[in-house]
Amino acid sequence: MEGNTSSSLGNSAAAPVNQIQETISDNCVVIFSKTSCSYCTMAKKLFHDMNVNYKVVELDLLEYGNQFQEALYKMTGERTVPRIFVNGTFIGGAADTLRLHREGKLLPLVHQCYLKKSKRKEFQ
Image (cartoon, rainbow, N blue to C red; front, side):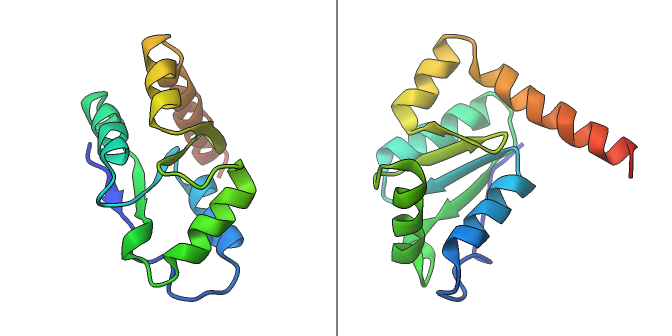
């Protein structure tokens, strides 16, 4: 499974927090990234190597990327990228994600999300 890059975000400056929250709730794994960031590349490679589908939002390719980065700062307390969310929860940056993976905690978080989404589909 490959990650997919979003260009649908950032078409307007209106309510970046709402757009971020919608993206996070619609996807099990979301990586807010910049194309030139080596830590972002490492995080994307980690999920790719685990065969986990993820949504990538490349902030440097968005017209209103700075507003999105500011909203992420307000939501997470850090301005750096990547900002990684799993199952609707902020898990940190690249180092935090790598640590969770080494501790064997990352994949269970991802699986919880997929289980929750599949149960939702059963009841629709």
